[in-house]
Length: 388
Image 1: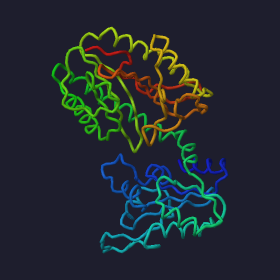
Image 2: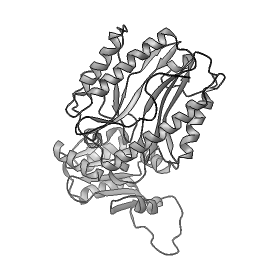
Image 3: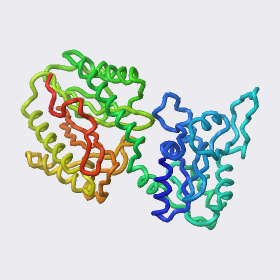
């Protein structure tokens, strides 16, 4: 269970309890789908906007889920947490067969205060996701608990979520395979006159047919391929255009993130030279993925290879990142990165290159760090430059 990794991180960091309030971390701790990657984003909005959902996880003892009575049935069905406390709701609902949920307090914040007191957390160190709670709630907590040292909960969830459970890996694996199928469908529609939007729709249709949602959806052709987050518009592909894909799928909240580059017709000498550089960088970085490797060393190796090909000014904020409940999470492959790779980490390793006004290229692979090295997840599509 993911919640056990949270408890391990609490013990390691000397924190008595943590309060999850970001949607991804509520889901991570409880199973309640407060994530944006589901068709009904109502629970996500409750957690992100109205401070209506929390999970309190003590270092030892029972965890507690706090949510509106309006979603009592969903919470009891989805969550593995048995102690669920309900706040009031503006939703009218009759209960002909009984089973009306018991209201602990009218507001979720009131429930949170009560639960913290019940659990004996009136002193000690408690982790809070400061960037996802309001100023008024933060002020109230410090007044209600003057002996508590409230600390940033981000390091707890960062540490816990970096190493995936087998269930998490299975979901990411499925997201990668689905994205490959959808990307293949998108490549199949490329021809002279094909609009970026048609290519993107082919990708999305495939994922819908697979019963999944999409994550990153950047599709650009021609000069638009150099736009990092191009949304896929009315531009029509021409002979010689580079088409760059940066795409992912989502399974049970878990993302994939893969990139491929296609050229319609003969690539220019510059395009070929750029792709040769990033392809070699990608292969070099992948060869370094194994337990004990430093994220900063992998970054440096990738950048150095691109520079070796004559692109001396090449620099990146990262040469890859972790994937999981969000498309970019730790461990980041960054300059000076000191995170040591461990089995169970899942990475998106990439080497993007953009020339404004001309083209952009990328190759990005998703890998699991294994006991002896890595497992490549996206194996169906070639990583070499695809020429149509």
